[in-house]
Length: 65
Length: 263
Image 1 (cartoon, rainbow over the protein chains, first blue to last red):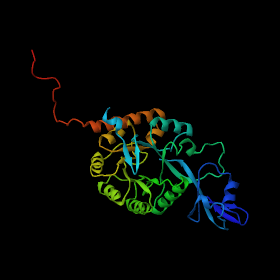
Image 2 (spheres, chains in turn brown, yellow; image 1 turned 30 degrees about the vertical axis):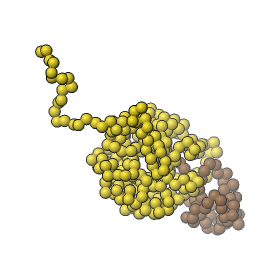
Image 3 (cartoon, each protein chain N blue to C red; image 1 turned 120 degrees about the horizontal axis):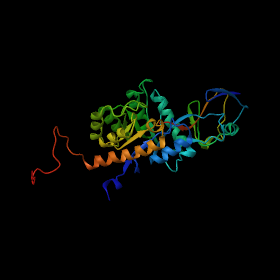
């Protein structure tokens, strides 16, 4: 299936959980995740299944004023 | 002990000693940011929330590794938001990112050239965020009526601009800033537009509780040295405010006595 991940098309296997997507991305440090504009709490990463066409945003803190 | 040694201030429920708040943007590299921020003595440090760069170099340090939430109060901003909804969404993501930390800097912009805030959207976003239990430090114009409205909504600090963000023009309307300070019962922090140390001192002499700046330090030729200058300027301005300045006179007033002259 395909999702829109941080604005770009991204392919992943069906029935993938958010947790396994994050592991595949090898993310470092602190981040927060939103799927279709709903924030997914860290505690739900393992149970949250990703669906075809989901719009996923993964954000972090960067320099700003 | 001087009065200034125990001169602390409170935002929401937290007490701070440093009245200089700094941003983390525009630095050449993370080492330069770290050095300047440490030198500034700031306790509250702003960050922006943006998409994670997914192809990122693993050796590149994460900002929160350098500006550790255990050492600094992290103040996520809503920079780049031009409507209330995106600002609210940014704050909610920031709260999740920072494990429930609920202090945010709200800014809703109106115009790319001036980066002046959109006050209608700012008021709307502030109300929604306060109702959602955020502690909102709000960027606004130097309009005293709006500043009071934002305080009444429940913002924990009101942050009027000195001049446009990144302009370095210094305080353009000291009359309004003083008026905002006189009518406030929450901290007033000048946010944006400071260019050099004297600008920060003027803000503090007007009675502001603090100054938030980024570009003035980050774009200096020597950011660490400017951070040191800003720290002293904030302290000097604050002490001058507490000391109570002499009245201004139209003409001279001799410092040496007229009596006892032998000439």
